Image 1 (cartoon, rainbow, N blue to C red):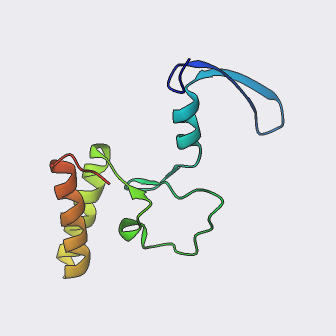
Image 2 (cartoon, one colour):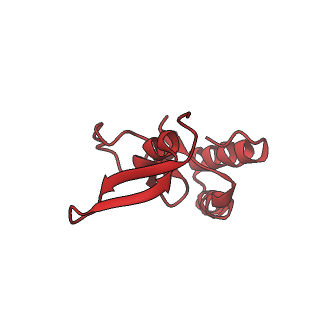
Image 3 (tube, rainbow, N blue to C red):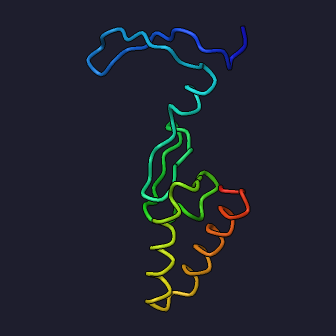
Length: 104
């Protein structure tokens, strides 16, 4: 059995009850600390505190994917309309990464 094989995983629910479900240990461990953002995911481990609220797109723990293209495009267009050249360039880079299949 490998870490990518589905198996029964026991964990505790919010009120302490035992929860048994089918899962993939390696994937579940990774997804456990991913936090959903408006335009991607924060993959920073929960043990590492983050004091920043608005620099996610520049952080090495930021990941995005094609599903967030409409949001990223809207953020790009908003930055361009406001003349925010640095933000426009940032969203250009993220959108180009999605086009080239290098979303991160």
